[in-house]
Length: 406
Image 1 (cartoon, rainbow, N blue to C red):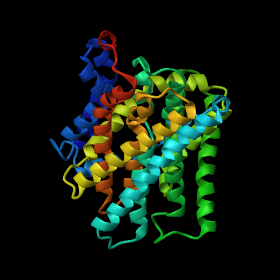
Image 2: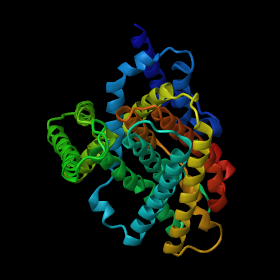
Image 3: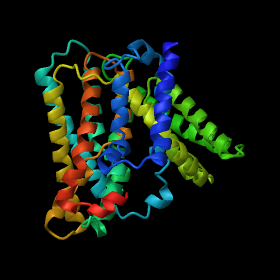
Image 4: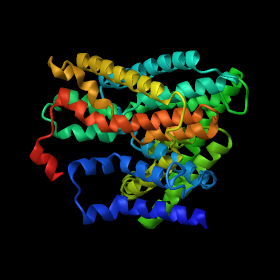
């Protein structure tokens, strides 16, 4: 009964938070921002989880595994379905260099810093796979940018021209390099094997990861042909993505990555992309809110080494984004001045970072996995809170009248 009550509470809050509340009440800008970036729902999860009222106990949360796996595949699919080659091939090579260069630079800085931190401050009495899984996860999550945080810059006075074009591309695709490294790490460093496996086996598992994503993308394309209305389309998408993520988890591969490959396959092969986009847009918010609340339930601040690791993570990620922004400023030929600090507009983090962290925690559960997940969630919270203010340095502030109208 406690399980049913707990999930009914989460579902009710998800429905209210994503639809009804906005139609009945226009909150002040600060409150609205908490809803837009999802932080309020993480807080609700903490309040009803083990760290708060304990309505959802650890035992109950453990039984929510299938729902969490669905959410992981769903978030990966939502990312992949926007990577349509017909549109992406029109983008100049210079823009791709900016997006991937910034992402890989941030990945490298966080990877090196976290590696040294773990090596010097934590004593590992277990396999190095656990060590590198934690480091790769933190670095991969740091590399990306939430697209919504970039789109919110559209009303800034200096967010114009080639700089804005490059920033929008970065916000759309810079999760990809870190996600590729993260996804293939599962293949070459599986949880059921001590240490790295032989290269032929690793390549086979990497190929299996890609094959699963492609097959489920084709399956979704085929089954969508039988759907007669949007409700059926939504059920088909949820069913196929649930199956894809479940199979990935069963064979110890990344559910997020397989979902992404399925989304890419579907976007580039299906003629029903527009229908899928419309259905996804109508249901995305409720599902994402429910996922954030479950994440909040799993969050615990009672973790050793949390503060120094979080500060290190935030500092290195900030440095990577700013340096990447300097690279982009140089390549696009933007005018000198504050726009050189355009990387301050790339601090926002969203669903993909949280999904990779939860995906890691489910398959590489260890004494440090809770530290990694808590650090990442704390990093998302801090970046979402301070990101808009720091973005004012290069791009200016939103006009007050316009902010009130939003």
